[in-house]
Amino acid sequence: MGCYFITGGAGFIGSHIAEYLASKDHKVIIYDNLSTGNFDNIKLIDNKIDFYKEDIRNLDKLVELSKNSNVIFHEAAIVSVPKTIDKPIESTHVNDIGTLNVLEAARINKIKRVVLASSAAVYGDSPVLPKKEDTDLNPNSLYAVQKLTGEHYAKLYFKLYGVETVCLRYFNVYGPRQDPSSIYSGVVSIFLNRAIQKKQPVIYGNGNQYRDFVYVKDVVNANILAAHTENISGKIFNIGIGRSITINELWHYICNIAEISLESIYEDKRLGEIYGSVSDIQNAKLFLKYEPVFSFEEGLKNTFNWYLTVVARNHNK
Image (cartoon, rainbow, N blue to C red; front, side):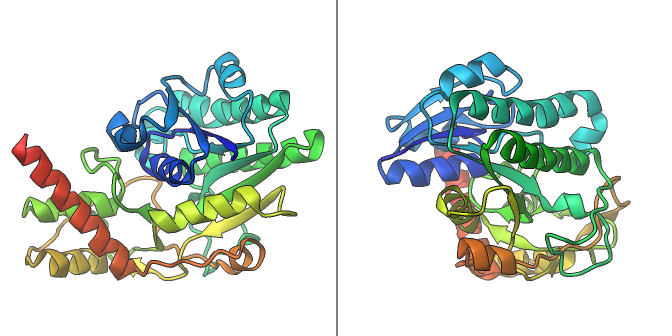
């Protein structure tokens, strides 16, 4: 049985990693300041985990609380492109210095491996498709620059200090527990929430922009593989499904699942957002033995059903 330390473990992806590890009877430590995470995400496993409400900008606490861990999953971040534009200094402190603190805690405590959440945003609007790990990078948002900086820190911590690091470039992750209440949330969660409320969605741009949507349980599997696969330290992997869906198509799928018919509202494109993105996941398949299990349609249905249960539960309170 191992000991796993998860920054941002009460958040969307982090809570799913925690749930999986707890189900295998591992020791799980969650470190989250709850700025965007929610304790409700982990309440079903709260008797199986140790939770600390702390900030990754606090190096001393990171060192203290991660001391006996085998692996760190670094999920804590300000993940919103618009928010990093609105608050560039704060987001840099969290996403850059916070990541450096996590790596430094791993070095000090001689933790075997750190798996870092990166992002397909680092590719920006590079015209090369699909996106490969060696595709020219063209980050066009502060968030993308911050994630790319974290990748460089990770490589250097492996090269200079021998801290085993693996970076996973997530494409568009969706699934249960993704908070739809914020304008900064993922488009799938926002659209599902609008569908349940029978309200029109807002699409920024013409809706022909496209994304590679990957279900959260496939992302959890990628993290577990990255934590335990040998001879991959210092490497970076794309984590998606290798298929693109336009935003207009996404709303069409959701309308079919929800059995509604509503036209979208179109507004101007938002600053810093890319037009098209689809992953090449051959390296993840080759080195990690990663294989997406959930089709887009299956994952979307699962997520919609979860939102329905949440709405029903809130209605009965």
